[in-house]
Image 1 (cartoon, one colour):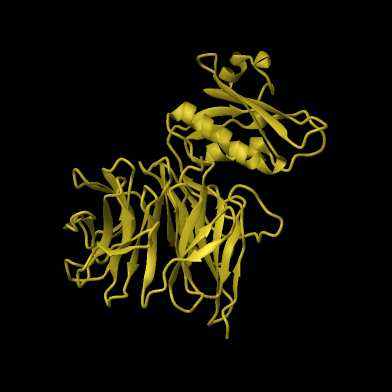
Image 2: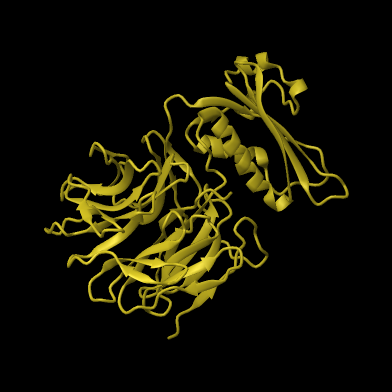
Amino acid sequence: MMTRFRLLGLLLCALIANAVSAQQLTIQITQGVDNPIPIAIVPFGWEGFGELPENITGVVNSDLRNSGEFSPIAEQNMLSTPHAEADVYFRDWRFLGADYLLIGKINRSTDSALVQVQYELFDVRGEKRMIGEVISGTEAQLRDISHQISDVVFEQVTGVRGAFATKILYVTSQRISETVANYQLNLADADGGRPQVLLESQEPIMSPTWSPDASQIAYVSFESSRPRIYIQNLSTGAREQLTDFPGINSAPTWSPDGSKMAMVLSKDGNPDIFVMDLRTRELRKITTHFAVDTEPSWMPDSKSILYTSEQGGNNRPQIYQVTLETGWSERVTFEGTYNSKAAMLADGKNMVLIHREDVSDDFHLTIMNLERGSIRILTDTSLDESPTIAPNASMVMYASKSGGRGILNAVSIDGRVKYQLPVTEGDVREPAWSPFLD
């Protein structure tokens, strides 16, 4: 029987009429910071005509609340609903315990298809305006504008760039019968909103990953009954089959400078790490050990690669680092019976990985400092896998199990904030967090 296969072109930041909706992921906070920052987000005023398709106030409120860092004040407790600085009375907001105040208004002229969103952020205790801006866009872009506002507020208050306006890729699978499953490669906002199906097949889809400029993605598809690596342009939907070697073709990952792609191939008999020059398509073999070498992940300088290998024997995978120029490889992890799927933070000093201390323990998401060799377990979930780091390095998303189904979880780098992104049916796995989109 021929494989059922469907490819849907998609514009990255806009919905198109014939796009297929994926199952919605909904953030469920499981742990926040002990003393979240109180903020008042006043419902934005609407000065135009008709109804808007998106509630900006609601999206910003959810973004900041779901970050675990903020505690928005309930609308029914507000003493006033100002939309301009002249109407702000700081004593009212101090009385409610707010440290910060966000107000705004939306308008649209009768002869324009664009809406204008004006917002202002205030420091209540200091009684000063921190920032204000007017953003224009179509009604279809209101959710993007909402995430932009959330990013600005988050950065102004915490000093860390917000990542609410980014995207995630993830794979879902749902059993159709005892022998057949349906697989989907999905694209969504970082909070799980606006999910869209990019690829659907009754053969497995694996290892989605982003190009550094977020214009392309790569993934592994078994649509030809064998694993092959594909690259897809998100703005046009056009895609290209990158590899067609015998055996394993898996684990694609772009170098940070965007010029190369690391991957795992077994065309020579043993799974090894290879690097392809994406301009010339020249392929170079990086590892040659008799053990299985897999799960390549680039260091921030694009000069070396972390990977998982059982070179140490005893069926105990560990993390190794290979320098591309010399081919020199060295072991990085020594603690525990299992270490895999390493991903380096931009600081080049800390990496997240999947760690098991003893053969009887669960697999947990862990952060390791390379300079000190110290590790810290970030999760209390089980069967953790596939970590992906937010571009601002504040959160790590990963796959795990709950109630016998695959779900996505996220945890902050310091372990203080945790949330889940379950789907209502089937399994969700293999998340990939996009770079910043600008």
